[in-house]
Each structure stands twice: as C-alpha cells, then as structure tokens.
Amino acid sequence: MTKRTALYPGTFDPMTLGHLDILQRASHLCDKLVVGVAINQAKGPLFSLDDRVEMVEQVVDPFRDRIEVEVIPFEGLLIHFVEKCGASMIVRGLRAVTDFEYEFQMAGMNSRLNPDIETVFLMADPQYQMIASRLVKEVAKLGGDVSQFVTPEVKARLKDKYS
Ligand code: ADP
Image (cartoon, rainbow, N blue to C red):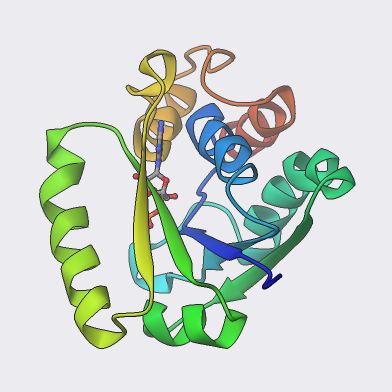
C-alpha cells in the first residue's frame, strides 16, 4: 500500500494550542506527517527558525509511536516543497471567514500548479478558534496570561522574550 504523506505548513511564531490541535488531527489522516516551518523572514518572526522548529518538535514527539513525523524548515514556493516531500496533501486550519478567502485562493492556485495535490482544511476546534500567534504575542508582550493559548513550554519562551 502506498504511504500517505501530509504536509502541514506554517510559520509557528509561536506554536499555539490551535496548531497543536490541527497537528493531532492531521496525524490521524496520514502515515507520514511533515511539518513545514516557513523561514518567512519577510514576516519578521519573533522567534528564530531554530526556536520555531524546536517548539514543534517538542509536541510531535508522541505521534512517533503511530506515524512517521518530520519537522523541516522551508522557503520558496510551497508547491515545490510539497513535491520535494512526496506529500499528496496540504493540511491547513480554518478559523473564521477571514481565513477562508485567502486560503480558498491559495488552494486554487496550488491545485492549478499541481492538480495531484489536494488541500485539506480542518475546521478549528471552537475552543481554539480565537487563537492566533499574532494575538498571543500581543497578550504576552502586555503581560497577560497566555496559559489558555499555548503549552507551558511556549509560555516560558514568551516570558523570556518579553522580560
Ligand atoms: P501561516 O503564516 O502559514 O498562516 P501560521 O503559523 O499562522 O502560518 O498558521 C499555520 C496554519 O495553522 C494555517 O493554516 C492557520 O490557519 C492554522 N492555524 C493557526 N492558528 C490556528 C487555530 N487557532 N486553530 C486552527 N488552525 C489554526
């Protein structure tokens, strides 16, 4: 049987409980999960690429009992990275209508670029749908409690950044 590989790309600046929920759910849809950490210098990430990779590595470890997992930095055209990984699907999370328009257009572009690759959208869990990395950073910067939005590990990293 052919191995089903899924790619979940993102910036993960930082990784949130929303990302973790998508990762967990995606891990049940494939035999191999590649988490693509976008280098994304243009977005001016708060965390270094190494930090962002580490944050993802720490949470995906338990999945390795069931499936193969790789966490790989990438830059350039997403579809080229998907092809390089041998993935047949791109996993994205959808939080709200505001995500929809951009994601719908991206999925359309990617399907034109390579019709064999399917984009699969997972609806955000209602308890996590308000979580966005950008807002988590804002709350942390202003001294708010981010425990409901990130793992204790990421919370400590945010505290270090803003102390
Ligand atoms: P990008 O720069 O690719 O948008 P992000 O790290 O912000 O990177 O998001 C990666 C993916 O995770 C996107 O598909 C985004 O919609 C999804 N995502 C982010 N936060 C959540 C959340 N709270 N619930 C579900 N999906 C989410």
